[in-house]
Length: 636
Ligand SMILES: Nc1ncnc2c1ncn2[C@@H]1O[C@H](COP(=O)(O)OP(=O)(O)OP(=O)(O)O)[C@@H](O)[C@H]1O
Ligand SMILES: [Mg+2]
Image (cartoon, rainbow, N blue to C red; front, side, top):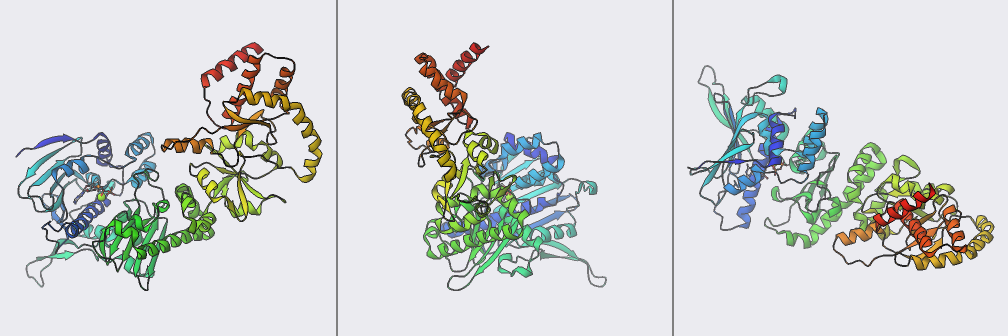
């Protein structure tokens, strides 16, 4: 028999090193991970046998067996599930495909705080590798359903593993741990002890839908010989089918960890039941933190579909819209066929009804958190708000509910975000619009020239910094009858009627005074901007760039290009502050016959500064700096 020695992928190696040196203090969870994998494998086998009629497998006694050898100090977790081919073993055990691994490892390396590291590992979940917290050698023997030969895999977790074919492996997978010595100080229990195993299974895996069996010793009656019997350690009760007051919070939490592959407790539990023509039970969870792949295109949805207690599929997109992809849990629908396909599900009317109810219930739960448990709501929004906002783009049916649970940063408070209702309640007399600004981050927006007049006049502005914000504000358009208005678009007029009258004469004078400069600059910068005008939004900056009400913003323009759309170059409007010495100086220089070249350079500098001030990018940064440096040199 050929035995090959192979290397773990670099990231797998690093993660394993963490496991071998055990940064995670709750070592008991290794068993939960192995049982969870075995349970997944049993589900997969049952499903494969339904889908593939040619697959000859026995699914009449799907189970998990725990076997202990006290003398050899080994613990084996065996299942008769789907098993793995040799290539699958190399692929899924030798590498980590999870997105975010590299980032996780980088953060772990940088973190010197042990508790923070634990937390991180907990968020990531390490699955099979958890075995190396308690074992110094792990063996895995597996045979894929439908294949004749099996595979033996073995490793000490230190960089390499061996792999060899085996002729006589039973179908399914057996993982054998060669246990480290028990060490109470290190939370390393004696995992050959029946009582310990029982407790761990009860605590973490009671709801697993397949029997977890173990041979246990029974003392003989009245001097008789002790005997052994096989017992099922778990109750196999489907939590979602029980009523809420029968389920302990801890049971919910462990179930959540099983379905979500999260190591942390959930933030909130949503347990519901639908009766009538289409019966279903749903047990959903809002996690307490966002997964690393929340915004990755391969990110999956978290709801599993069961039909009458039988697992049908993971990642059921028909049951949850993309913007709620972080919601985890189980939906058990009673009246579906066991071999329903994803395509059919998408179109199933009843599934659509269930989905609508689930979405409404999830949003109602968040609304309830917002009203009654602000701490939890805050966590929820900080973790998932950016995803939830995607719903404002196309879920018009729930738009009002979404607008109610929304919170955004605002100039009203430096730390606390506000909701839209709060903004409206603080609107000034006569204010008809809700003002917002978009940008990279709070500081850039607050320092951008667009803010000046709003700050000077004391208008509150919402500060939107997520990529999705520009899209939803455009799409939603208004709230409570008030238009959502970008401070960087269109003309602004924050003056009262009286102020306007008082300033009218001055404005008229400026308009005539600057008419010639504006016309000339319009020509000089024709390639870059579509219009030049005097601004009523600037107090201290010389200039800013703004868009027309329906123009694409630079961020959106970039986003569409990145997505491969053809977008025509959008020209914007340059607004000048007539009270700024640079602007009035340029006018005077022109009147006094400055050279065309030097005037044009000043105009370009003004435009460049306006772009930089809003956090934008220059088309030709090197030219800008060169001209600026020459100008500065002349002033020395
Ligand atoms: N008992 C088993 N039978 C069949 N395949 C298994 C078994 N145990 C592990 N695997 C395979 O190994 C993969 C890796 O397992 P691992 O527990 O590390 O990750 P996971 O279960 O996919 O996710 P998680 O990190 O949430 O546990 C599984 O996805 C599965 O394909
Ligand atoms: Mg796993």
